[in-house]
Amino acid sequence: MEDIKFSTAGFRATTADGLTAQAVQRLAYGISEHILEHPFYGFEGSGYRKHCQERGKKLKNPLVFVGFDTRFLSKQFAYVAANALVQNGITVHMSELPLPTPVAEWAVLNECAVGAVVITGSESPYYVNGLKWISYYGGIANNEIMQDIEKRIPSPSAQILKASSTEFNSLNAAVVVTKDLRKSYLAHLEKLINTRALKKSKLKVAVDPLYGSAKNYLRFFLEKHGVNVTGIHEEDDVLFGGTVPNAGPVSLTELKKLVTGKKMHLGIACNSDCDKFGLIDSDGSWVSPNEIAPMILDHLVRNKKLKGRVCRSVITSTLMDQVAKANGLMLRETPVGFKYITELMTSGQYVMGMEESGGLAIANHIPDKDGLLACLLAVDLMATAGKPLKQLRKDFYKKYNQLFDQKVSIPKTETEINRIMERLDIRPPLSLNKTSVWRIDSTDGFKFILKGGSWLAIRPSSTEQLIRLYAESQDEKTPTALIKEGKKIIESIV
Image 1 (cartoon, rainbow, N blue to C red):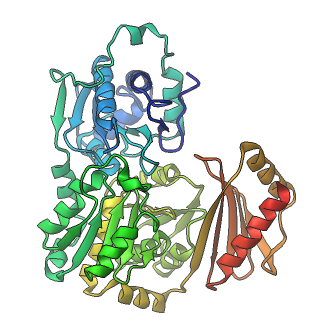
Image 2: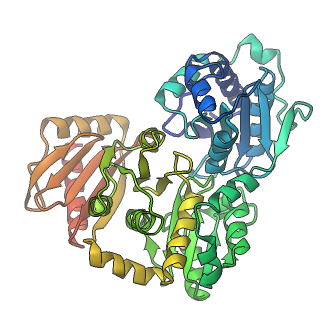
Image 3: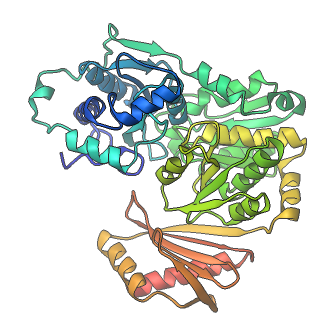
């Protein structure tokens, strides 16, 4: 059992090494037992039952959606999971198309399912794959759920595995229903996006699904509502064109060329399972989530009249704080990991939750991050205003102070990481860049906040053996200087 452990976004491992048909089958049996027995999150659980009552629905049998991304063997692994679930008496609806994680989450909420399994490696390299469990509230499983499932995973030698076939390349069609989950999700997005403005906008948008699940969604939605779309990387390629499908600036080089070469107004992209997004402006510049998310928040409040609180992770830009304060919205800071934001979004009190790596959630939708919606909201912002993004950014910074940020990741061993964090706890720096440290936030790693508002954060990655450094300031050169000092501090310790 020790070989299967969940990270912040589910189980993930190298295909044919840690992730095998048997590993998926074991996970599915652990999930099945969780569904049938957990007193709160399970089918007979008090939390799930209350959730369904509030929506006026009552299912006779537990329903689980099963989907897959475009990676090598994802569909076959999804078959293994689906077959194992039905063997435990669980009704399974299988996605016909590659399934974005946010679409699976919407399906769970819309039909009051007890959960969903998505086979995906998200933004990992092509040789990595994994399994996400989405709970009934429409978000990735929280720590309590993941720990419960881990306890229930059978050992590789368990009799229950020997008594059933993995049926690796076939689906038990007699008991598994296949469905197109796209229609309901896109119909819901039409309630969140100003489709009339899209039709009048005459926008030209470049779309890059990075060979992932977004290929059946972004183009389809935009073209339906009158947007001129040019796409790349919409075909199947399990190697993702030799890049990592993370919607960051390095992976969007070809999208940048398309936008500038064809004189498009905007380029939009999602990682392979669509839980994060990336944008390219008309001049080919990459637009940081730290910049566009506060602009979208301002758009939601001013143009869509949404109200509520705002939440962001501790290392996300404080530009969000400026927008929240100007609009009278309370802001809450969370540790790194979107699960903390999801927990707040499920309360119904928050208008937006955001993290700097490209995760964004809004009210009246799923409580988890949705890269598809984030991309469409950026287009919606431009169409509603009738202005290019460059002009919207200028207008935005007439109201708010522009901030500059930088992020780097440094590989370190587990021993080195522990030594760094221990030393920072015992003997933290009292000044950085010739400025006194005003406050230290230890919510997640260490965030050294300087007089004047500039800050440097140092924290270990929760998924890789990396030390991550983040810096932000109103001065364009200061983040580089802070990162440089952060590197010196780390090297002096190890």
